[in-house]
Length: 406
Image (cartoon, one colour):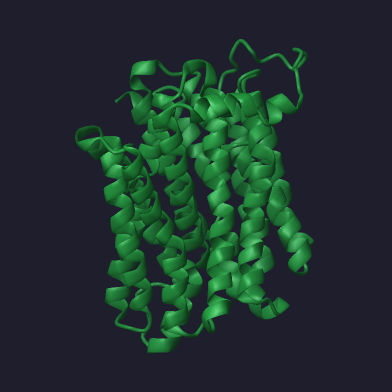
C-alpha cells in the first residue's frame, strides 16, 4: 500500500506530535474556570484565542509554501507550538496571559497543519494524492484523541501546569521528524530570495479567482461550518461529560478526559471511510447527508445530558463519527477542484476559513450557555449545541439552492 511508503508515514507521525497539545485546554477548562473565576464566555474565548493565532499566521504560512519548501515553514511552526504550550505551563496566570499563549500555540498549528499537507502534495504523484490526503486529515483525529488521553492522564497525576509542560514534547518530536526524515525539495536553500508583501500574506486576487470556482467555493464554505461545529464540540466535550455525571450521579466507564479521547478516535476511520463513500455517491451529496445527520446527533446528545451513561456514550460516538465523516471529503474536494497554479492560495483560504469557523465555535457555545441559563442546566446545553449545528443545516439549504449538489 503506497500510503505506508515514502514520506506519508513520517508526516502522519509528525502530525500526531504537532497536535499533542490541541486538547490540553479542553481537558483543563473546568479546572482553570474554577481557579481563575472565568465565565463560560471567557472560557470559550480562551479556546477561540487558539484560532485567532491560527488565522493570523495561516495566510502567510500557506502563501509561502508556493515560494519555498513547506518543510522549512513546518519547522518554524513547531517552534511556535512549543513556545505557546510552555508559556501556558510556566507563564499563564489568568484570562489575558492564557489568551496570549493560546494564540502562539494556534500560530504553531497554522504553520504545521496545511504546510504539512503541502509537504505531502509536493512529493506525491497526482493520481494517488486523494487517499494520502484522506489519511493525513483523518490523523487529525488521532492527534487530538491522544491529546485528550495524555492530557487527562497527566492532569490526574499532577496539576494543570504539568499538562502543558509535557504536551510540549509533541511538537518537539514533530520538529525532529521533519528535520531528520523529510528530504528537502529543490526549493530548499535558506539563502534563496523570498518575496514577502501583503499580496503574499493576503493574496486577495488569488482568493477571488479560487472563489470563482463553484466547486472550490462550496468546499471552502462547507469546511468553515464543519470546523465551527467540530472545534466547539471538542472544546466543551469534557465539560459536558463532567456536568452530565454530576447531574445523573452515574459514572462513565472511563474518566471524562479519556472518554473524550477515545471518542475522537472514531473520527479517524469515519473520515477515511467517508472519503471512500463520497467517491461512490458523490462528494457534494455526501457532505450534505453528513451535515444533516451530525446536526441531529448533536442536539440529541445535548438532550441526553443527565440520562443513562450508555445512551450518552452512544450518542457522543455517533456525533463524533458524523462530525468527521466529511472532513477528508471537503479537503480532498478542494485540492482536486482548485486550479494547479492557485493550489497553495486555495489551501490557505480553505484553512483560514475553516479555522475561522473554529474561532467562532467555542465562543458561541460558551456565550449561549451564559445567555440561556447556566452550565448546570440541560436546556442551556441543548441551546448551545443547537447554536453550533444549525450552520451545517443552513449550508445545505444554501448550497442546494445554488445548485452545488449534483
